Amino acid sequence: MRSTIWSMQAQFAAAKIGKYATSESGDTLEMVERPSGGLSFVLVDGQRSGKSAKAISNIVARKAISLLADGVRDGAVARAASDYLYTHRAGKVMATLNIISVDLLSQTLVIVRNNHAPVILIQENEIQEIDDPVEPVGIRKAIRPSIHEYPLNEGLAAIVYTDGLMYAGERIGQRMDIKRCVQDLLRVGLPDPQEWSSFLLNRAVELDEGRPGDDISVLVLCILPDDKNDVRYLYARMPLK
Amino acid sequence: MRSTIWSMQAQFAAAKIGKYATSESGDTLEMVERPSGGLSFVLVDGQRSGKSAKAISNIVARKAISLLADGVRDGAVARAASDYLYTHRAGKVMATLNIISVDLLSQTLVIVRNNHAPVILIQENEIQEIDDPVEPVGIRKAIRPSIHEYPLNEGLAAIVYTDGLMYAGERIGQRMDIKRCVQDLLRVGLPDPQEWSSFLLNRAVELDEGRPGDDISVLVLCILPDDKNDVRYLYARMPLK
Image: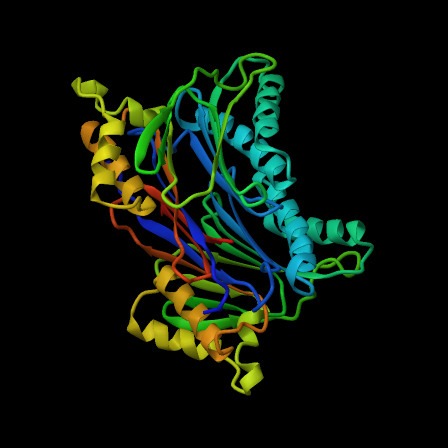
């Protein structure tokens, strides 16, 4: 490998499943490279489920990634995506939106929320919930996102999800305690995005007795120590009907 | 997990490294969900290396993913991306372009090439090189892509790469025999995209004595038997400076 010394690495992993007995998930997750360096993830949960939800989440996500690819700043992207949905569907449908970016220009993690579901943040082994009140996008003009920014440091991690994860287990009167799950995971060691995202999704599906009551998506991002490897990797897996 | 029986699954994995001693790779790889179902990958190698190559590959990839996200068919996307680069840079720069899609509507794998590097295709354990003559995008008006389409069947696989992989080892007079490497890998078992893409990239970096002579990107896609899991997974890893 090259002799360049990288000081850190970023890892991202997502797991996603559709509501039971629907043909497709109404959540859309997209990834795009930032023209000034870094990666952005856009997670959108369209109102309702199945095909109509997918159509809504798709237009919001598409608009967001297209603007991010043009170098538009994250907060402006959320505002634009909201106005676009509002105009396109006359304010009659809503969607939740999260944009999570590792921005190499500012050397920060940027978290944009228009989603009532909190984002879980880990800094120096401390778990915190980002849950300031926000509105979903598309329902009225001039919706504002909540924006948080953190310097990229080892051990920084974020867990972002759609509300299907929060409400998992509600049917059996045993709602998932996500923060508690993350505390347990953190006790075992450094965040492992692939393990953590799978664990959280599997736990939710278990609580929903194998039949998810809603679309569920979980994205885990973390900044880990350098392992002297400057290869970028990407992996994706999808079931085919 | 759900009781739905999925008949197959698609897996995609990519590995990517920049030319030795350049600040960033001039190759761009982007992934986008197809609005009618499925996933598309766009791989672009910009002329030259470093920042100027990255700027070129970025505008081509950005245009391509934005059109794919709008539901434009793959061949038309390649033509549009070529004309766009031609117009934008007055025909003075070129880029190679590959679009690889798993299209759930047509139930096919679609391979679009404007890249002199062949694509390796595996069907029923037979390895074949797709290497019909094509031009890169951006150098003149009305560039046409080569388009191949294959029904989605178990064991179907494609290996797509930028020419950095082909020319690896040239410096020491020992060019990489990619087809031979794939034959060896296939003898071990079913395609494993993560293992295969890492193996091919690592082999190339070895032949370049740890100092890649060019940007190298490898994408491996395959259709595998159903494993009764209808979760979608995504994973990405990037080094941080």
